[in-house]
Amino acid sequence: MSTKFVCILTFLTIFLLASFSTQANNVFKIGDDVTIEEQQKVNNVVVIGGQITVSGLVENNVVAVGGSIVLTSKALVRGNVVCIGGVIARGSDAQVFGKMKEINSSNISTFINSFFRGEPEGWSALFNIISLYFQGLIFILAMLTAFILPRPLTAIKQSIQKSKMKSFFWGLVATLMITPFFILLVISIAGIYLIPLAFTALLMTFILGYIAAAALLGDIILAKIVRGHKKPLIIETILGLILLLVIGWIPFIGWLIKAFAVTSGFGGVLLVVFNRRHRQATL
Image (cartoon, rainbow, N blue to C red; front, side, top):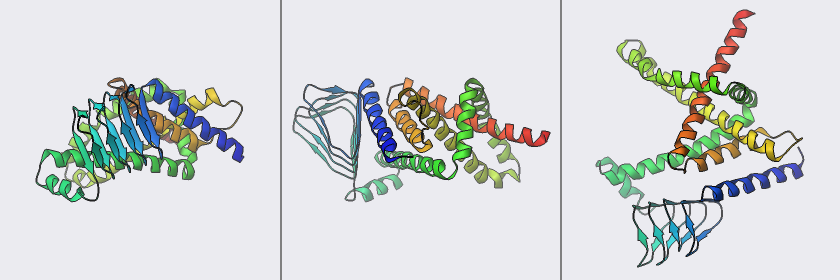
């Protein structure tokens, strides 16, 4: 794969993400500073490795990871302001209707202590930290899967693509059977010892299916932009994950789309496993 082609795909990925974020009225940046001007209005602002300066209106949340947040006197934030690894500087007339959370090396011990005391602030901070690390873990696992296990990931992606409704149906049915399945394990003597293994296998299946669904989304988007070239699986996967992350910011609809992706991905994994066993049984 030529360096020129990789550069073109990288540019298209960044361009597509910027366009998508603009359409959804969200701002998402990595390694760059963001300024919301006085007359500007956005839904969410998320920056990784950069500073956020707000002088305009943010309808929902402002989140900075590895950077600081500056709220000028003209800033109006109707949601929460979360800063992880930096500080929040707030002007005297800045308005924030939600909560302001600043998590860094100077106060992390305070949040941990409040968590162990059962205080709501500690639980909320812990949830934000876990959510952040989980998103990072998904991206790391996606890259590893695309590099180390490209064939299984491609097989699951193709399974979802060929049988979209079937994948969703089986994923939904299997999801509804999770609770009865674990109840059976709990009430059985031998099943209790299998709960950790079953939970780990189930979690990894959901994650793998979600990554495959993201790869399919990235494939569909790139197919409309780049024609006549073989698209790298890693580019498809990362692009799809970023798009699903941004889509998740859209109220109600975003979570429905992500739930559909998770369910279809879960069903796609099951279809690949069952089809492979069926072929082996008929040989």
